[in-house]
Image (tube, rainbow, N blue to C red; front, side):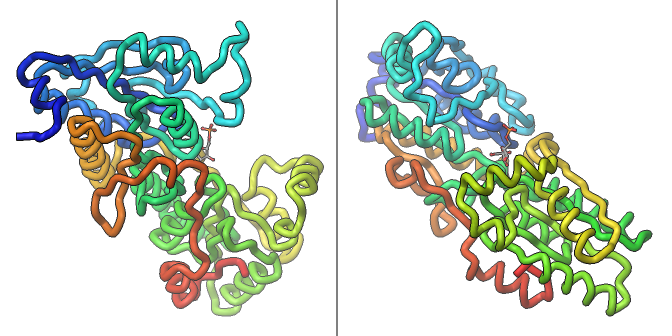
Length: 372
Ligand code: F6P
């Protein structure tokens, strides 16, 4: 028997457990699997439970747009990409900016929460969404979060769902480039997502057998890249494959202030990092360069089995915390085990690739050029 009151009372039919749920920020694979994990677990353990899904993330909470969801709503979605609730970007930095009608966003969210008489709000989100979740918690709401992002940059969890699915897609993109690269004497750059971190590029780069991997955490020198390409040419290789993170930055650019960098980017006017790096390589080496940007394809399609299991495990654990009335946590993975991490330890922090990480060292030992 559960010791906590909610479960016991709900079983006896005395109280109603009301749980709100929203998916916030850029979507990713396994969001539906995670929501299903929370919902199915609650429905199967608790007699009187109501789940309210907010439309398009925090926007739905602000505007009071939600739907009461049935157990059936969570059937058949385990393998579905995207989110059945919809999502939107509601940047944390604009939370203090009033709405058009002058009302305060946080106050509006609290109002909606109280109007439905929620016991808890479950937020599935990445870095920005965690800052807002923490803010809501500090304003007295019961909040739990689940780590979603293909970037894998959330602090205090070893992995977030969506990441492994994106790694698979990015790896497949590099695999495809390999066959065409082998037919031509060219340099191919595949630009991968990851925002300001290099997790996705590092993992896909290794899985796809990239010759050069460029991540934001290790600013690159164009000379080192040119040397690595020359070494391959001298050893008889006809092509070079570069996996470059969208946030990749040169050592020279890394020395600029934020403002200076912004100005330079504006003047250069490249569509994205890979085009900039490609132009630098062409200028330095005279080699023909081709750029591939898989973009949002990396966030699309069905979640891989790993993510389905991970998201389900995290969702079921969140349900358990709700039944135990334990709030104010992100459910994550630590030392390969499910753990609850205080939201205040997660919010506002970004997990970067450690430049001395074993994987980085092993990539170097393999002969992969990390750009420096
Ligand atoms: O955070 C996930 C992510 O896909 C990043 O990798 C990428 O930089 C960003 O979102 C793209 O955002 P949007 O979908 O808003 O263009």
